[in-house]
Image (cartoon, rainbow, N blue to C red; front, top):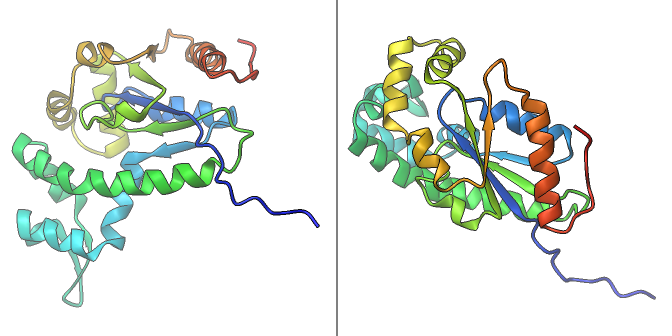
Length: 222
């Protein structure tokens, strides 16, 4: 009779991906996903915390006001993210307070996800996508960091359409984030995502370089 191994699988390398609002980092993540790279979207996970975490919801309305809550029959069931965004993206100290609540929770979620994904050793690495990967120091656990860039005017237009807000509001959010120049100092790879850029070829080249650096014989032709 064989003996079942209880040894945990080795954790897959983590590659971080970041970029300013509207840069196209989620598009890049989707391309990596099509190449059998599991992706963790920290910003989407953060949004999902509010309806599932009563303690966090209560903290938000206590800190920022009842208008930041969504209520049903007198019960706090979710967070009004639009109202919350209007506050925190106009006040860097408020944003820092919110991030201090959100990021430890997202970090815990990532560790559980990373462990589960590492049972599939057919994947070369996992991707951790986060708008403030660098600012939050989450990049320190990454094998490599990818920064996605695009012209600010183009980013503002993209984000305004996606979020249903004004270009002016997007520009305010851009000012609250790191600049491309600041991200470049900590990034290992830079991807350019304007219409004239061959984004797919760039992603393939980065994928192949990362696989080579971690000793995985997995290549795609560009």
